Image 1 (cartoon, rainbow, N blue to C red):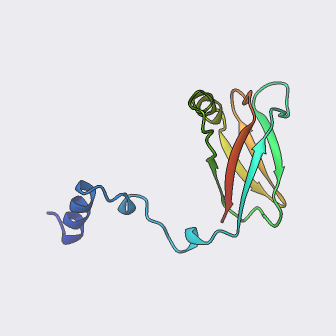
Image 2: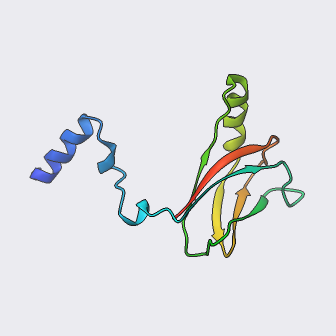
Image 3: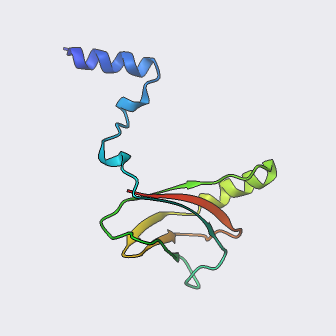
Length: 118
């Protein structure tokens, strides 16, 4: 039997309210550092996985990091950027830096990203 909460959630989903699927907590709203960086095409390791360390002042291993692409205004460039951004597998926070890992292939063009440290 559906509860009032179930019914309310179903109604919100039908109306396109994605906040109930991906709730934002107060902690997630606290951005301690926001930075825009460009990842060049130099990566460590001769074979996968490839890694890159980027210095981020004030970050610790306790912080969470979110990255977002900064898309080009040029349509053809954006298409290439989408393919290259998809090569990034994960981002880990470290003390004073982040470690970006590409599990299979590494980007072949410079990529602009916005990172948020929580």
